[in-house]
Length: 336
Image (cartoon, rainbow, N blue to C red):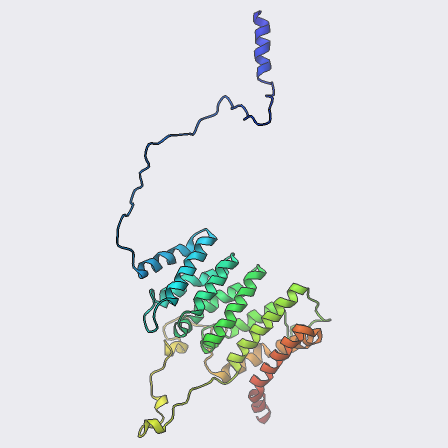
């Protein structure tokens, strides 16, 4: 073979397409690097071999740290372990970890993208002591409000479930905490797209899709529970004076069961505006509702009642709560 024909043949090799056959591996490239290795033993550093099992408190701390894990399944299993650990303790026994540690660690999972994690979170919250939940109502309400305005419909629906549970367990703390009344009212009005006559009303009945109508019904149900807790008279357990004779009006001289009793005075914090103010008195909440939300709610209910069906029934319940809760307020206005 002459030198010229050999050079031509070598040049053709660079441009020849390899023939691929079924069942046979493709030929490796000339510059392929082998990454295979063989090892006679594997050494694990920091391997703990102990016959003493970790305590329940240590396991709870471990699972609280795993709530930041990237795997949905791991977060769900950690919440399930905490739920079973708290459920398994005998009544009167302190929690494996205090609620002041558990609630701040789990409350951000209200916005978790996994539905299984969110449902397991709600199970955990429901078994916590109600007094501890009431103490952290302001932080839970902050994450719940963020969930109510989330882009995901599933997270918005779940946040409404959390709000209804929170109002049922600690309704007084929810409506009286800093920003709990005004900010929640503004949140509901923006979600329901309700405007007062001064801000402009709907020119025609607003039409909703099937999924939007179901979500609006749940939003109105949550608003009904929220207004019932804020506008109705609080149920006060009266103490019989006969059992405390010769002491009279003992309940007025006892220590308050609420933590941070003088928080509404805002002695050591930054100055609050009206939205972040605490409204512990029912009369103050009625005044704010009348000034900032009642016209928009009445205008929106007129349109919702015309829709009928589930939306009409939810609107009728909401209208009844508004009328009953504001009846004495408007009666005083007429007298004055």
